[in-house]
Image (cartoon, rainbow, N blue to C red; front, top):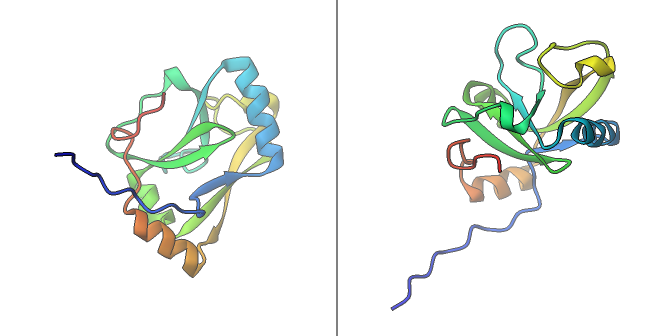
Length: 142
């Protein structure tokens, strides 16, 4: 007897994307640092901005929510931030200025910034059908 695991519904909705400017910068940073990882924690200072780290230098866990990928790099958000942003599509952009010294784009004289828009009803329905997004423990970066 075989066990059939039901497939999760397919969706076209996504929780996170990036602008072309961000895509170009991510590709440049990936060339300099190797595989990357994004995290938005909601902590002090620049913690509510998306931070970009070399993937092997940041550990995600059960209190992080996997939002998806931008430019092939995983994007996680702290659970408390996710509670606030869960009804919005995040659009990662780049603006002039210095953000945190911990984020790898800092020496470039720019910083990542989160823009957002509220999900449409159709997007909300699609994402609701998928259930809650996985945690960092359930979907670790590879």
